[in-house]
Length: 319
Image (cartoon, rainbow, N blue to C red; front, side, top):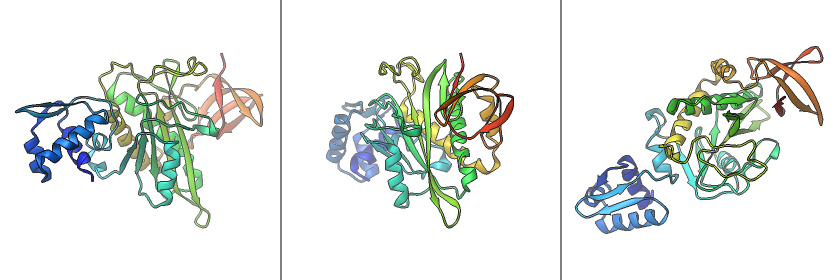
């Protein structure tokens, strides 16, 4: 690990408190000059670090994503989770697929301050501006069948909602199958991509991409009517803190996948149960009434007097 990363680990664990340069140097077996140079480098990268004589260094509650800041707030059972943070990338999902192919372990997470070509489902672009959102991909190696793999998106939706609920009094809702809404605006999108093993009939790994408009308040004109921020800019929570909460809940949900206990939680947070919707199929639009969500996450609807189950597709609530 680089010297600056080691120094940042100590500062992150003591956020808001002064740590003497002598203490840091002693703990890391470094010279005071090496610590000073590491702090200067971190400051140049955007970290708000104060340096006061006879007190030491203090990391303020800045909102720069860092692997050290995230890992320091994970549950102890997930303390060995691999977390990678990039300043900019085309797509964290693409990066995660490369890592998965190279043998990255279950739970490996990659994030970016911005994505230049972020993608949601069906190749749609996902607006990913620098410094205000959370763009995260996590590798899930669960040894599950193809039929169970579709449940991962459902589980991830519940994980996002529980993360928000655990640190606020907000009540997010899920628009089937992979969008999270708050106060009528989309605040999060989820996309999954499976890597399969044809011989065994199992899924080798699943890449789960989560994009959160954490404090994103400015959107392109076409997104302004439908997208919004999760929190206002002055909400006292950093992206590192929320990311750690989100990773904890995602890993918990993956562990619970075989039991499917999260399905009832998914139903309870549904935005469209009991409502009339429009869905697209083979380039045609159909109206339907949503009457349920089955145990595999499928949307049970009534259309033209017939009951059927949708397993994928785009839906919108009819107004």
